[in-house]
Structure formats: structure tokens, C-alpha cells
Image (spheres, rainbow, N blue to C red):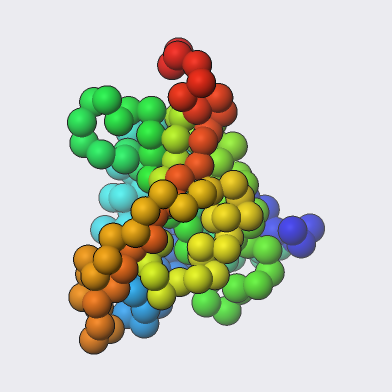
Amino acid sequence: MNDELTVSDACEQDATAIAGIYAHYVTNSAASFETDPPTTQDIAQRIVRVLGEGYPFLVVRDGAGAVLGYAYAERFGDREAYRFSCETHIYVHKDAVGRGIGKALINALIAACEARGFRQAFAMIAGTEPTSVVLHARAGYLPCGTLTGVGWKQGQWADIFMMQRKLGSGNETLPE
């Protein structure tokens, strides 16, 4: 990672930058299955919700403090038995791809999830995003399934490629 880049916790004041990064993916790709970009207020509420539920929400900043990417985890599944599993999300500013930001974010997110006691991480990646599949594979995620044609976006059916990564000791030990 470039020395001028830093990973830190997100805050509500980052919502404008995050909304701008995310809007590109919502409107120009199937990387997100949302069809309308959320507002800055929507993103601020998401940050507060994610952090309030005990999950990490991270940003990468350049030397000037600009947000170049973000990542967060949230609960995987609504039922109580899923409480040690999380779903991870990573987005990098379209003009900053290829600078090691995704790698820095995913490594920091994995560490933050492990520190919180989570045991499994899942990523749901659109079949149109092979770069994201490679990023996750390099971070230790393994394929665990494909949901075929589950989303209609950009004038086509989109698949979801599911990947899973053990966090900490995974299911080899009892939860704390």
C-alpha cells in the first residue's frame, strides 16, 4: 500500500464521499443490486446503523484526507444463530482502482471482524465483477456457491458469486 494512504474508521462526515463512490457502482454496474443511488443522509444512517450494531465501517484516505474507498461488514442473516457470521462489502473510487486500496481495505476489514469475534465472512459478488472475485480470493475467501440470474440490472440478468472466508478459528472452536 502507498505510504500516503491510511485506513481508519468511518464517521458520519464521510457520508458525502461514500455516497459519491457508491453512486458510480449503483448507476453504472451490477456491482450493487440497488437501482437508485442512496442519498448522503441514507449513507450517514447506514454508517450509524453498522457501527451501532457492532460491525466495522472503514475508509481509506489519501494524504490530503480524501476518501478513496470504503468497506464495512454487517450481519449475515437475520436469525440469531448467524450472529457470528458477517457479510462484507468493499467499494473503491472509480479513479483510484489499481492503487492497492481494495487490498488495504479487505485486510483491515478482516482484522476488524476477527477482533470483534466474528467467525465467518461472506461476500456476495456480482458475476460482472471478476476483479472483486480475485481480490477476495487473494484475501483467503473461497467460492461457496452461485446464485444464477437473481438480479435484473443494466438490461441483463446478473448472477451472484458467493465467497466465504474463515475468521479467526472459524468453526474449529466454540464461540466466546
